Length: 236
Image (tube, rainbow, N blue to C red; front, side, top):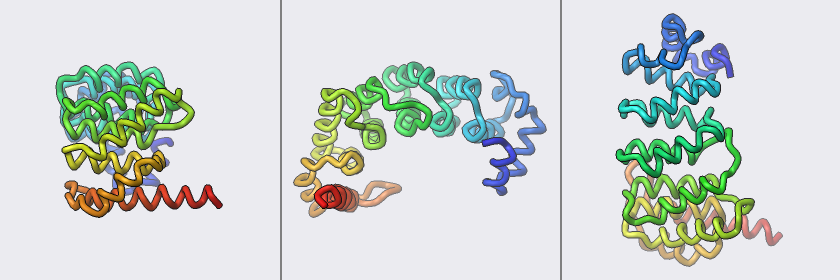
């Protein structure tokens, strides 16, 4: 997508885009974003995600690695659209070794929604280890579970696939409602039929509301419908 296409798709942002153009967006260098104020930088990060290239992804990795915590999630969203395989090592470093949970969650979001990378066994292993580690914050484990739901495929080695499925099944019994919720999502997205008994229990009994979403029971019921619907289609 080029800048004109972005303007056509987001007419409400034309003034902001033209402001960035006047500040040198078209000829931006690696350090250009550091010359902007926080509001301008936020818009620039968003625009890089729409029109960016590999160099922009490098810049956004710098933002995600920086102390600019107000930009982390914006950078993560943009990176999910333009990051490539070469950026995985840096993302894994932040995800596994970062000291700030919000920064790690941002990296987890990026790898959960990558569009320019093929399924990577190391990615599945990292997400599985985080999702299954009860010493990690529930919010981070939940993001890892969402990533597994988005990325897990039977094309990866069987041992990694089975380990990920086991972690997803165990998450349905977790003490943290947020983890149970995203466990429901994951087993539904991957169509894990052996999760049906646990999902049915949660659909009947777990009415905990997850802020910004809905109840665990509803998510469990949605996953049941998805799994049973796909199973019925396969049987026909």
